[in-house]
Image 1: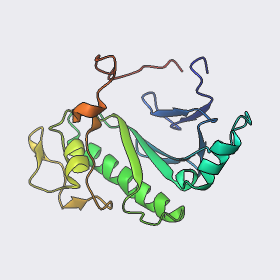
Image 2: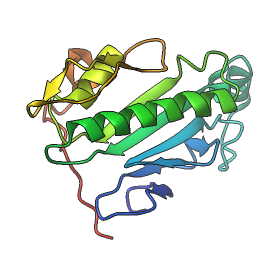
Image 3: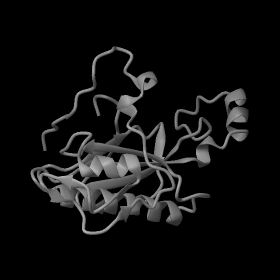
Image 4: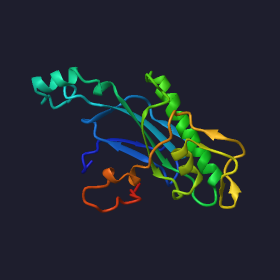
Length: 191
Protein backbone atom coordinates (compact mmCIF):
# COMPACT_ATOMS: atom_id res chain seq x y z
CA UNK A 1 0.00 0.00 0.00
CA UNK A 2 2.94 2.36 0.58
CA UNK A 3 3.44 2.41 -3.21
CA UNK A 4 -0.22 3.15 -3.88
CA UNK A 5 -1.29 -0.36 -4.86
CA UNK A 6 -4.50 -1.01 -3.00
CA UNK A 7 -5.77 -3.94 -5.06
CA UNK A 8 -4.17 -7.35 -4.62
CA UNK A 9 -4.77 -10.91 -5.72
CA UNK A 10 -2.49 -13.64 -4.40
CA UNK A 11 -2.29 -17.16 -5.80
CA UNK A 12 -4.13 -19.45 -3.38
CA UNK A 13 -1.42 -21.87 -2.33
CA UNK A 14 2.27 -22.63 -2.27
CA UNK A 15 5.38 -20.84 -1.07
CA UNK A 16 6.38 -19.48 -4.50
CA UNK A 17 3.21 -17.99 -5.87
CA UNK A 18 2.35 -15.10 -8.15
CA UNK A 19 0.65 -11.97 -6.88
CA UNK A 20 -0.90 -9.20 -8.96
CA UNK A 21 -1.22 -5.68 -7.56
CA UNK A 22 -3.08 -2.72 -9.04
CA UNK A 23 -4.28 0.77 -8.21
CA UNK A 24 -8.07 0.71 -7.89
CA UNK A 25 -8.32 4.38 -8.86
CA UNK A 26 -6.73 3.42 -12.21
CA UNK A 27 -8.39 0.08 -13.02
CA UNK A 28 -11.18 -2.23 -11.91
CA UNK A 29 -11.11 -5.99 -11.69
CA UNK A 30 -13.81 -7.16 -14.14
CA UNK A 31 -14.12 -10.82 -13.30
CA UNK A 32 -13.19 -13.33 -10.67
CA UNK A 33 -9.46 -14.16 -10.75
CA UNK A 34 -8.68 -17.54 -12.29
CA UNK A 35 -6.23 -19.78 -10.43
CA UNK A 36 -4.57 -22.58 -12.42
CA UNK A 37 -1.42 -24.65 -11.83
CA UNK A 38 1.04 -21.89 -10.82
CA UNK A 39 -0.66 -19.22 -12.94
CA UNK A 40 -2.96 -16.42 -11.84
CA UNK A 41 -5.22 -14.70 -14.38
CA UNK A 42 -6.83 -11.34 -13.69
CA UNK A 43 -8.84 -9.11 -16.02
CA UNK A 44 -9.12 -5.35 -15.68
CA UNK A 45 -10.73 -2.35 -17.29
CA UNK A 46 -9.29 1.13 -17.10
CA UNK A 47 -11.26 3.40 -14.79
CA UNK A 48 -12.47 6.38 -16.78
CA UNK A 49 -12.14 9.86 -15.36
CA UNK A 50 -15.90 10.01 -14.90
CA UNK A 51 -15.65 6.90 -12.68
CA UNK A 52 -12.72 8.32 -10.70
CA UNK A 53 -13.69 8.35 -7.03
CA UNK A 54 -11.88 11.66 -6.56
CA UNK A 55 -14.49 13.35 -8.73
CA UNK A 56 -11.80 15.53 -10.27
CA UNK A 57 -12.68 14.94 -13.91
CA UNK A 58 -13.36 18.17 -15.78
CA UNK A 59 -16.29 18.55 -18.18
CA UNK A 60 -13.82 18.32 -21.06
CA UNK A 61 -12.30 15.07 -19.69
CA UNK A 62 -15.76 13.59 -19.28
CA UNK A 63 -16.58 14.52 -22.90
CA UNK A 64 -13.28 12.90 -23.97
CA UNK A 65 -14.26 9.72 -22.11
CA UNK A 66 -17.65 9.63 -23.83
CA UNK A 67 -15.93 9.61 -27.21
CA UNK A 68 -13.46 6.94 -26.14
CA UNK A 69 -14.00 3.22 -25.84
CA UNK A 70 -11.13 3.02 -23.34
CA UNK A 71 -13.42 2.15 -20.45
CA UNK A 72 -14.77 -0.82 -22.40
CA UNK A 73 -11.33 -2.19 -23.21
CA UNK A 74 -10.24 -5.05 -20.99
CA UNK A 75 -6.69 -6.01 -20.12
CA UNK A 76 -5.74 -9.51 -19.05
CA UNK A 77 -2.73 -10.27 -16.87
CA UNK A 78 -1.48 -13.86 -16.72
CA UNK A 79 1.00 -13.91 -13.86
CA UNK A 80 3.11 -17.08 -13.63
CA UNK A 81 5.56 -18.80 -11.38
CA UNK A 82 6.21 -21.92 -13.42
CA UNK A 83 7.77 -25.10 -12.05
CA UNK A 84 11.53 -24.97 -11.53
CA UNK A 85 14.12 -27.62 -12.35
CA UNK A 86 14.19 -30.20 -15.12
CA UNK A 87 10.44 -30.01 -15.65
CA UNK A 88 10.12 -28.43 -19.10
CA UNK A 89 7.02 -30.48 -19.89
CA UNK A 90 5.21 -29.29 -16.80
CA UNK A 91 6.13 -25.64 -17.53
CA UNK A 92 4.73 -25.96 -21.07
CA UNK A 93 1.56 -27.55 -19.69
CA UNK A 94 1.23 -24.77 -17.10
CA UNK A 95 1.59 -21.95 -19.63
CA UNK A 96 -0.69 -23.71 -22.15
CA UNK A 97 -3.35 -24.10 -19.44
CA UNK A 98 -2.95 -20.43 -18.52
CA UNK A 99 -3.33 -19.29 -22.14
CA UNK A 100 -6.46 -21.42 -22.54
CA UNK A 101 -7.83 -19.77 -19.38
CA UNK A 102 -7.25 -16.33 -21.00
CA UNK A 103 -9.27 -17.36 -24.06
CA UNK A 104 -12.05 -18.85 -21.91
CA UNK A 105 -12.29 -15.75 -19.71
CA UNK A 106 -12.25 -13.44 -22.75
CA UNK A 107 -15.22 -15.39 -24.16
CA UNK A 108 -17.02 -15.28 -20.82
CA UNK A 109 -16.49 -11.50 -20.63
CA UNK A 110 -17.89 -11.20 -24.18
CA UNK A 111 -14.79 -9.84 -25.90
CA UNK A 112 -15.44 -9.03 -29.56
CA UNK A 113 -12.47 -11.21 -30.51
CA UNK A 114 -11.53 -13.52 -27.62
CA UNK A 115 -8.60 -14.86 -29.67
CA UNK A 116 -6.96 -11.40 -29.61
CA UNK A 117 -7.23 -10.06 -26.06
CA UNK A 118 -5.04 -7.29 -24.65
CA UNK A 119 -2.74 -9.61 -22.72
CA UNK A 120 0.32 -9.32 -20.54
CA UNK A 121 2.05 -12.55 -19.55
CA UNK A 122 4.56 -12.00 -16.79
CA UNK A 123 6.27 -13.67 -13.87
CA UNK A 124 8.92 -16.29 -13.34
CA UNK A 125 9.11 -18.80 -16.19
CA UNK A 126 12.06 -20.61 -14.57
CA UNK A 127 13.76 -20.72 -17.93
CA UNK A 128 15.45 -18.43 -20.41
CA UNK A 129 14.48 -17.52 -23.96
CA UNK A 130 15.39 -21.04 -25.08
CA UNK A 131 12.92 -22.88 -22.83
CA UNK A 132 9.75 -24.52 -24.11
CA UNK A 133 7.33 -22.31 -22.17
CA UNK A 134 8.83 -19.13 -23.66
CA UNK A 135 8.96 -20.65 -27.15
CA UNK A 136 5.28 -21.59 -26.83
CA UNK A 137 4.37 -17.98 -25.94
CA UNK A 138 6.54 -16.40 -28.64
CA UNK A 139 5.70 -18.83 -31.45
CA UNK A 140 2.12 -19.72 -30.51
CA UNK A 141 2.81 -23.45 -30.44
CA UNK A 142 5.24 -26.14 -29.31
CA UNK A 143 5.76 -29.47 -31.03
CA UNK A 144 6.92 -32.89 -29.79
CA UNK A 145 10.31 -32.39 -31.44
CA UNK A 146 11.19 -29.54 -29.05
CA UNK A 147 13.75 -30.84 -26.55
CA UNK A 148 14.50 -29.28 -23.16
CA UNK A 149 16.89 -30.86 -20.66
CA UNK A 150 17.29 -33.83 -23.01
CA UNK A 151 13.57 -34.66 -23.18
CA UNK A 152 10.59 -33.64 -25.33
CA UNK A 153 8.34 -31.16 -23.52
CA UNK A 154 5.16 -32.52 -25.04
CA UNK A 155 3.94 -35.71 -26.72
CA UNK A 156 1.70 -33.84 -29.17
CA UNK A 157 1.45 -30.42 -30.79
CA UNK A 158 0.22 -27.78 -28.35
CA UNK A 159 -1.19 -24.64 -29.99
CA UNK A 160 -2.13 -21.41 -28.30
CA UNK A 161 -5.84 -20.62 -28.52
CA UNK A 162 -4.89 -17.01 -29.30
CA UNK A 163 -4.68 -15.81 -32.89
CA UNK A 164 -1.14 -14.41 -32.66
CA UNK A 165 1.94 -15.32 -30.66
CA UNK A 166 3.14 -12.80 -28.08
CA UNK A 167 6.12 -10.47 -28.18
CA UNK A 168 8.79 -10.27 -25.47
CA UNK A 169 8.53 -6.61 -24.50
CA UNK A 170 12.01 -6.65 -22.95
CA UNK A 171 13.49 -7.30 -26.40
CA UNK A 172 11.81 -4.28 -28.00
CA UNK A 173 14.15 -1.26 -27.75
CA UNK A 174 11.42 1.40 -27.61
CA UNK A 175 9.97 -0.23 -24.48
CA UNK A 176 13.22 -0.05 -22.51
CA UNK A 177 13.12 1.63 -19.12
CA UNK A 178 13.74 5.37 -18.98
CA UNK A 179 16.46 5.02 -16.34
CA UNK A 180 18.35 2.58 -18.63
CA UNK A 181 18.71 0.05 -15.80
CA UNK A 182 17.38 -3.42 -16.44
CA UNK A 183 14.27 -4.25 -14.45
CA UNK A 184 14.73 -6.49 -11.42
CA UNK A 185 14.01 -10.10 -12.45
CA UNK A 186 12.36 -11.02 -9.16
CA UNK A 187 10.73 -9.21 -6.32
CA UNK A 188 10.57 -11.36 -3.21
CA UNK A 189 7.71 -10.29 -0.99
CA UNK A 190 7.46 -11.51 2.60
CA UNK A 191 4.30 -13.42 3.48
